[in-house]
Length: 429
Image (cartoon, rainbow, N blue to C red):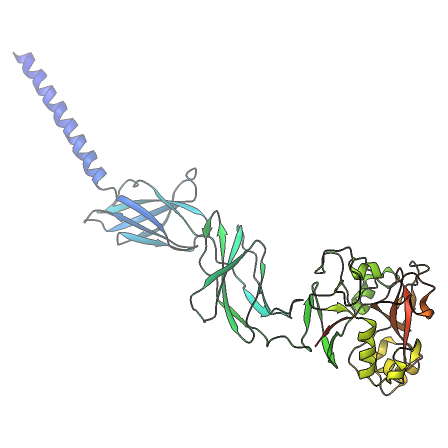
């Protein structure tokens, strides 16, 4: 009997011991914060929520950016929430919480995670650009590169801090907004997208478009800006055309030459072209060729109308050779580039604003040669000239205009299609 009593006492003791352990563990587990939830706030903030004990004096917050790393204490809270700040954009963070009761810290809670949004693009700038080749208005946007950005969304409004509408996307850090109204202020913000998550709006910028295009406004074409000037009922480029393959509206092969094969000369004088290059395989007069939409390569008639506006008598217009009085001097520009002679000694020098420059040319008999830098400026027309007795030597030949350093007048002549000369674009106005 005594042995059975001892066994019963041992069992009772074991049960009591197990119950004590159970209640201790249960009490300890009840001290662990529960229902931890992580919420993305921005590219640098995550907010945490959880449930805890009424006896808590504070909660400790632990964080890691990888489950393979240890958790590090990053802060504490006296409430059941915490805003974690100064985080990296587009980064997943993992959290655990403990609670402190009577100076004793509980075990870690279950983890929760959230990922910050992509970073906000910085450095957004907007500026109104010169008119495009088809005379549409344009505003250019540029901004700083954002690490991790896969693409950018562009938003626009006509009201400051107004309702934005998405107008496009960009892979690189630039965007051109076209089809805009004249004299209108547009407001822009952009976002960046990383792993299909979009950032918040960037800071807002604005730009105001110019008036509707008029002759005298600059025109952007092929990545370059050309001044324009109205003389009579024509609008002329004030610079020689300077385009290469891929920069013209028509998809044609453009073979550009620079005097002495020096690209720097093209930057000053424009490009030298043979007629095949400038025509883009078009034929007849008033062809667009390498010129912008709505513009054309100047014709022989365009040149005569210009000469008449500058004072040449009608009886001289259709003559060949040097004609008129001081029309050549009026057409020239950049006094410093011309060789000294009658042209720039005239009081009429540069009065027209057309600004012919002495960039020379290549002859039809040998296009490896360059002639007459600082002495002459030669320009194509799209008018074939083989019906004129003076031009029967070349086949085909085209009417040209030449201004020469030692002549006040302007020369009407012809040039072989394989030789090179400069191009001025023109349009009716």
